[in-house]
Amino acid sequence: MKEPIRVAAGQGFWGDLPDAPVHQVEDGPIDYLMLDYLAEVTMSIMQKQKARDPNAGYAKDFVPLIRRILPTCVERNIRITANAGGVNVKGCADAVRDVARDLGFAGKVKIGIVTGDDIMSRLDEFLAKGIELKNMDTGAPLASVRDRIQSANVYLGAWPMVEALKQNAQIVITGRATDTGLTLAPLIYEFGWSATAWDKLAAGTIAGHIIECGAQASGGNCQYDWQNIPDMANVGFPIAEASADGTFVITKHQGSGGRVNLPSVKEQLVYEMGDPHEYITPDCVADFTTIQLEDAGENRVRVFGVKGQPATDSFKVSISYSAGFKAVGTLVYAWPDAVAKAQKADSILRERLDRLGLKFDQILTEFVGANATHGSLAGPQLLDAPEVQLRVGVRSSDRSSVERFTKEIAPLILTGPPAVTGFAGGRPKVEEIVAYWPALIPKELITPVVEVLET
Image (tube, rainbow, N blue to C red; front, side, top):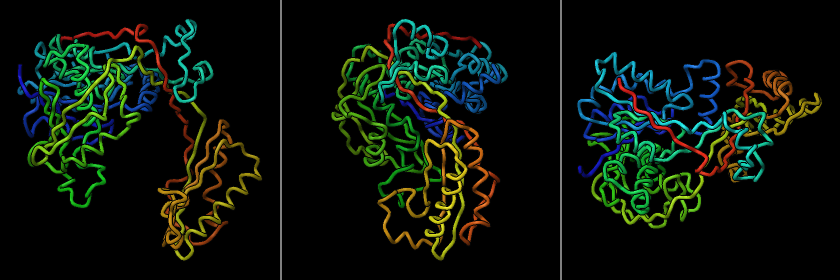
C-alpha cells in the first residue's frame, strides 16, 4: 500500500481556470486528479443542451482537457475522477474514448462510468408510490411543480466510483456525484477503508470538502491578509496528502502561487456548512467540530482528529424547475449627486411600470457603489459616491411584462436625470428563471450502475 496518496483538485466549477488541471498533472507528483464540474443549476443547463442535441449534456471542456493531460497521466499513472458526465455520462465517456484512441492509447486506458443518478424519467413512478419528494426548505410536495421540472438528479456518493477504480479504470466519469466523493473514492480504494469506518470516511469527506472548490483553499477568494498572498496570477490549486489512518495534509505544488495556511483552510471549511455537528453526505455524517488543524510547514496544514457517524438512509435529490422570467437593466450616473440621480431614475421607472399595469412578482433595485453589497448597512458617506450604477431587476410568471420592462430602461437616458453613462449592449435580455428544489429519497429506490469501457 502506497502512503500518502496525493489527490489534487483541478477544477472547482465548470468554467474554472483551464490550465489548473494541467499544472496539477505536470508540476509535481500526484496520484489522482479530482475534477468537479457540477453545480445545481448546471444540471438544468445540461438537460436543456441534451434536449436540443442528444450528443450534448456534459462538460464539453473535459474532453479537450483529457487530450492535453492523458499522455502525462498514463506515463505517471495518474488516475482521474470527474463528475463531468452531467446528464449524458455515456456520451462524455464515448468522446473521451475517441480522444484516447486518437492519442494511441487504444487498449491501454479503461474508462469507468457511473450512472443511475438521473431520475427525471422516474419521477411519476415515485410520485405514484407516494414518494412525495417534499421540498426540504418549504415542505411543499413535488407535485406542485411537476409540470415545470427540468432536471432531477440524486447525489451519489463515493462507493460506485470505488467499484470503477477496482475494475482498473484510469478515468472515472460520473453524473451528479457529491463533490466530496470525488476525493473520498480514491482514498477508500487505496486504503481499503470499510463501509462502516465512519471516522476515516468522515476524514476523507472533509479532505474532499477542503479541496472541492479549487484555489479557494490555497489563497483564492481568501479574506485573511489577501493583499499579501503571493503570485495569485500563478495560483496553485490544493492537494490533499492522505494517510491510511485518516489524517491528511493540505498543500500545493512547490513554486506555485497562492498560499495554504490555517486561515485559508479554515475559510474553506465553513463554506456551505450548515450544522457543524452533522455534515451529511451519502457516505457518512462528518462532525466538523472535531476537526483539528496544525501548521505543518510552509504551505502545509495537517488535519486530524476527525470523527464521523453512520450514513443516513436517504439520498439528497437536486431538482430544478422553471420559475418564471427575469430581466436586469443598468444605467450609470455620474457626480454630482450620483446616488440621488439614480434614486430619482428608479422612482420614474417604477411609476411608468405601474402605469402600464405590468405584472411582477418582484422588482429589486440596487445602487451599485452605494448599497449593492451591504444593503442598508451602507454608510452615509457613500451617498456622495462619484458614480453609481442603477441596477433594476424584475421577475414574473408573465413573460410579456418582463419583455416590456426591457424597453423602459434606455428611455431613461433622455427622459430622466442627467449624466447617464455606461449603457451598452442593447436592451436587457429576458431570461428564464431556474429554481432549485432539494428533496430526499430512500436509498433503497436508487441503484447506481457502474460500467468500465475499454478503449
